[in-house]
Structures are given as C-alpha cells and as structure tokens.
Length: 486
Image 1: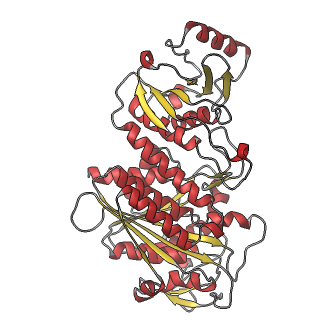
Image 2: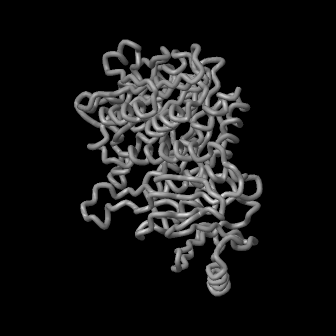
Image 3: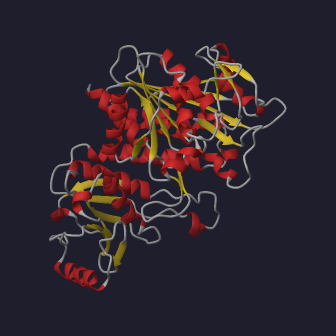
C-alpha cells in the first residue's frame, strides 16, 4: 500500500473517499456539490451517522464512506487511528483500489499527528486473521493499493512514521496469530531475523547452553517439559553510538502455554498460542525503531519457549536460581511468564540498560480488574511510570497505573527460597509485578505492561477484526523516540 499527502484540490481520480464526520461539524467543502448534497440528505434521514466508528456508505461515483468521529473535542490519537481503520475496513470486500482519506484533525490533535494516526489505522485495517483458510474469497486481501491523505498542511515525516509503526503492529499481530505448531520458539527466532535484516538491526539468539552458562535457571525451568529448544532472542539498535542502552524492551515469549503440570482448563486453551504477544511486540517495535533510525540505543530481549507437561517438566515445589542470583520456588507452573521475564530483565540490565519496559500477557487478574480496554501499568519510580503512561496516551494506547507497594513484595517471599512465583488470587496482577520487581536493580527505571486483557479481542469491532490486537507497539516506539530527544 502506498501513501501520499495531498491537498483537496489534488486528489485526482479515486474509487472511494473516507470522511470522518464529527457530531458538530459540516461535511468538507471540497467534496463535489452533488456528492455533498446527497450525503447531507443521508445525514438527515439516517440517524447515528456521527456515532463513534459507525460507518455509512454512499454508493456514488466515487463511493463515499462516512465514519462517525464523535465529538471533535474528544479526538485523540487512538480515535483518529480507529476512524481511519473503520473507513478502510468498510472497503474490505470491494474492488476499490485507490482511496482518498480525509485526515481527522481536531482539538489537540494537529494534522501531522492525525496523518500519522491515519496511516497507522489504514495499515492496521489491511490485516486479516483468516490466513489459513483455503477458499479464495475468504483468504483474499483487500484490493486497496494506494491511499491519498487529504490535508491542508505539510505533514513532515508523519507518513513514514505511520508506515513503520503500522507495519510493526501488524507484524506483532501476525506472529501472535500463528498456530503454535507454526510459530515455535525456533520459528519466532527466524521471523525476528527477517525483521531485523529488513530493519538493519543486529540480532543474536542464545541457545540453551548459552543461557545455562549465564545462569538463567528461572527461564530454563519453563522449557524443561518441551521438546522444542528454548530461544533467547536479543535485538540491538545503536542509534547514537557509545555504550549502554537508553531503553530495554523485554517481552514474554511463551509460544504455547498449557500451564505445565498445573495444566489449564481446556476451554480457550487454543488462544495460548498468543501467549508470546509480549515477545512479538518488542521484536516488532525494535524493527520499527531501526527503520525510523531513532537516535537512541535500544535493546529488545525476547525469552521464548513452550510451557508443556512432560517427564522433565518443572514440578510445583521445585526451586531454581535466577540469573539475578535469587532462588525461586515454583508454586504454580502456570505462573511461568514471570519466570522467563526475570531473567530477561536481568540480562538487559547486565547489558547496560538503565530503563527497562517489559510487556507480557501475564495475568488473568489484570483482565478481571481492567477488562479489555486498558493495559495494566506497574513500575518504579513514580515519575518514570507517569512518563510511560503519558507517552502511551500520546501514541494512542491506553494504560492504567496500578499500585505496587512493599506489602505485595512481602507476599511473594518463598517458604524455602527467596521468592515464590504464586501467592494467591487476591491482587494477582500486583503480586506478579512484585515478582518481576525482584529482578530490578537499584537505579533502574522499570515499567511492566500487563497486556493480558488487551492482546486479544473475542469479537469484531468496526475498526478491528477479532483476534490479536498488537497492543503497545506504538508506545514502545514512542518511548525510544522520547529518549532519543533527551
């Protein structure tokens, strides 16, 4: 898909036009008069044309798709992206190839930011989850190959940024959507190598022996029940030269989570193919950071493995030593994500990172607390947590800060070891964060993003199909850009 920014007078011949319609705003004056009059009649006769993300189509020449944009004062980057996505998705089953997309700019969202969000949304809308269906009409991708962004001001590098971030988000969705037999740890590593090559960033994959030599007993304990070898993926972007890293991204890479010996219920276990969404997010984000030539040093760490029962699998009550030197008592083998993440966090710090953000489908408890619309945010110090939250909001992601105090840290103390990986259901998301905090060294700024409520949606929405959603990739790229400036 190709993008270009044009003024209304230079749209040229297109097959369809996507127009955001605000509750209190008129239709664009640059539309042909006959088209504008027809759309005005539709607005009068059809209620709800400004309902958020609601789509109304006028089958004229060209076709016009009206997308409800709600109140202009409430527009933010997330809404601008979703408006564009809803408009493009409405053209999925058409033969439309050339689209003009009016940029939704209002309030605090200027045209450059709105243009970037529109590009992200258009690319986001082009992804379909039914990749393994065989009927042509069900697997065929939308025909759209060019999008003209209608703006009145120069939008700078917004198009390039939108393309890099939109493609990265879809890459994360693609990895998470693949069945576990088609996205094993080795295949995640191969996909990461392809993305790294395309982005011009360095990558290495540590095997079991290298991880053992580094003392990653906690991570490797999860891999004991699987015949698939663990793959500890490390990607590096050096944007400013010098030593150390301005930011580390650590993602949970459980390519299938059966729960291990503490096996999960059968219902919806197939969705555990996407338990590596954290790893997919940091891999895709690092690739986008490389493509954008962000002037910061960033490292991405993705400890990947399967979590399966077997003759060699970890048993409840087993004790292992993490890379940090702390001993870990495994109470519940289904609390495995935190076991791989602590060694990933320690590795990033040993590599010279002083800021660490980890991403994980870590706890069902966060979905109980926040539902499917907000990602849980934990960390320290408070100033860094707030920086992550505000950066996410500006990037178009919704994070909600959760508490993390010493009372919760006390609850994860083990009976026979330093810490235990499970300490009861109450406050489960916070206790999981407290477990990760055990690996965070003094002087390290750290944030934990629990995406267990936002990584997957069980129903279609106007702006996104059901399935993997590619959460927080935008936030990770925006954080790298923020620290490039400082």
